Image (cartoon, rainbow, N blue to C red; front, side):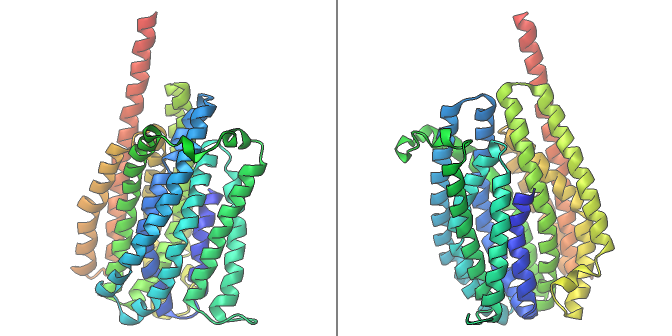
Length: 436
């Protein structure tokens, strides 16, 4: 959880430190990151395929298969980073056609160019991280992100405001800080893999010459539905950012504050979702389906308890949290109302993320992909649009639409997990009885 949260803290530092420059720079960071997050969701979604595969191989004590997962996973992550970076350069002009405030777009473009380049090291890091997570060695990602955050904050201080002999680069300086911190995370993980005993068996005979179409196809078949799951969720949040921008600069800045806070708690859920993927994947490798189901529901219950605290915390501190980011009274007022809604959807958002992790451990990804599309774009988007533009709710209406879509996703996904695990247990019981 701390490893996942650390990645979002990079964005938190950027938002807080850029927010001191005013509403327009904060809105520009929001616009750039919302577009980049779509690409990032696709890339990270593909790397999530690594975790259940290595967890299953680790559960079955299959070192050869584990080494193949590492070789193919790292190569795929590197290629994805380059492809997505190039794609972002071509997509960049779209910001001028999105009916966003002109001053916001002007500020966003140079920042967007820098953070797009950071996709390459971030996805390479993500490939190493998902492999380590699958082996239950999660502390290294935590260590990498903690140090990366320190590097980012220090560089932000000098490059955003121009302290000491550094130039005042404002939001471009925040982008450079993010890029450098992500390069560090890759260097850190390469060092860890080369020096830690737990990883050395996987590096013996490691070679990209061993790449096979079969393993690439397996990772792809697991990866693309997971990538689309994340894309459907992230893209509706991006749509809300853009719709908030159509309502005004202050609305978009307030939306970014609430979104950044919700993203931090969501990454706690993603971290626990990785736990679900690993533990469910281990039991799948052992073919112990009763334990698999018990472990899955135990993790889901833990997520509900954690998110209940987050929900209460958001609602109680709604008038205090926005001041951390900005001192504009109108932005703070709008953000406070959005934080209340963010508090309400904590349970649904965290729960559906962890259940998706459990289903990923079962290597069940295609039906959940369809479920998330229905929840976010068939149910959620029309509600967001109607409440945001055809009622007096405004930006709060957009977020009530998110609440409805996340709740629909959570309900459908837990039904899916229940049905699959019951079927696995029943089939295993029938097979056992036939052998008797």
